[in-house]
Image 1 (spheres, rainbow, N blue to C red):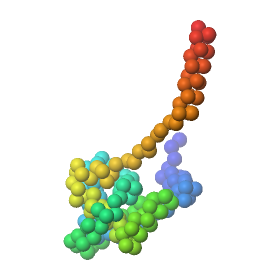
Image 2: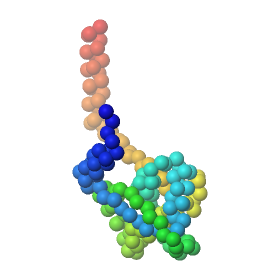
Image 3: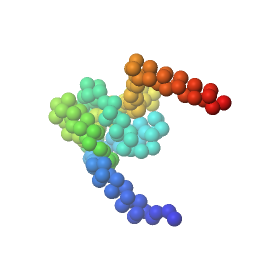
Image 4: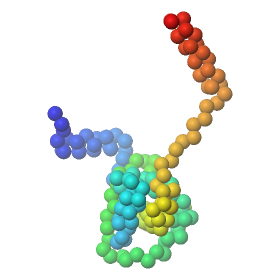
Length: 159
């Protein structure tokens, strides 16, 4: 039988607690949340938390700082909420330090402004999924080849 909403919420809360994930709330200037929505639409991202995490991971502080004097109405403010694990929180703290001690709210605003200003095609670099480079050293390669040869010999004997 399927779980009801309360059971799912309780299970998710336990999982977040185990992963030391916290909810971050940013009160941003009017229009920033709509810009984030545009970025998500352009890059086919359905979760706000995922979009914010990618913006944080791919951030270039020097580019984002160019938008610190952007003309955006101050009222009414909007709330952006998302969950973040320790690594993202540390990266956000690091970005804030690189941006002359800006608050997390201002870092988020600047990252969204920078990516949105790049347009539908240009924003993709701000929201790309970072990939790890995998290299196999010579020793591992040799052992894999030896294992492959042993397996081929074993398969030949079984036939």
